[in-house]
Length: 394
Ligand SMILES: Cc1cc2nc3c(=O)[nH]c(=O)nc-3n(C[C@H](O)[C@H](O)[C@H](O)COP(=O)(O)O)c2cc1C
Image (cartoon, rainbow, N blue to C red):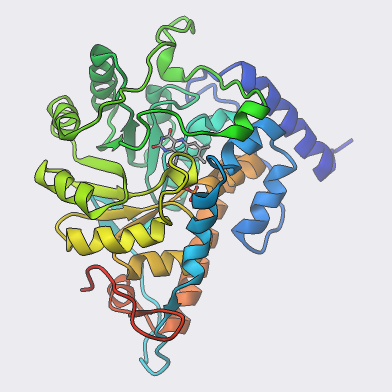
């Protein structure tokens, strides 16, 4: 007898429990693919509610919740609602292609998939599913150093471009090894995450006694853990950028976790190729300003010298529009991608990206912006109608 939706989702949730204790070690050929149709959703906020019904609670909390009082987590969303668009209705324009070129990757739109740990918590296809979904849509995947599958498995899962995101640990040899493996596996850029010199205060994870699977990159060929004590380096500085650059074989370097003009200035001085403005989705420093507010400051400092990728709080096409108008060149989508993966595997990831693009196109049409350049030239307004101080506008 065919399963109904509820039973299907229950089965998925069951497989998730298994994943929480046994990381996937599959190759591209043997990756089990469960393709479920995505339940109907009107927007990505609703998708989160749907996902909360299939992802086991400790895993869902790990994804959805933030650090401390979750002030920054809330602010990331609230900041968008403090900003308005200077709408033009007589431009005679209609929305064009959204092709975006960033660090040598030609993307269908300015949407990329943000780096996130442990995709295997939500779906048996884990990062391979996300890689396939991102590639099917036409964008790149940022792959976390602490992914469920190892970086070679993920690289082989799709033809789409991928950036490897590293944390620096106290083991210099291990850092070097991961960077070398990423080059060998064909990653096209390195993302250094700078806002995790120590884990954030995630109280809900402690309440849930969350135990994450050992990341695929930390297992040896036989599946045994080989690096479980690789604790974060808690002294990151400009020399850390130099270290990563020195061992990345000339790959472009993206610095992720920048929220201030001062850090952006330093990063530029040390030759970064792009800056990812992010407060880690409110998971690290609770009390860090809304990422959108940080974007305005960083963009004003960067003045178009390198591309800016923005993340933390994007849930609507409207948010994407505002971020691009505020100075971002691309936006990275985080939590909603995991929700899509949980509900529909690679097709769910694809659907999330398509949905955001469709919302973005509607906003563009209504705002009178036909191209990405038009978005960048669109003034943003404060609630009283006065112009918002924006970063760079072409
Ligand atoms: C479950 C989860 C795991 C994450 N793991 C990483 C990681 O391994 N490395 C990293 O740099 N950022 C990580 N992030 C942060 C994301 O890259 C991104 O900054 C954040 O999700 C943006 O917030 P949003 O999802 O609310 O838009 C993670 C985020 C989530 C939700």
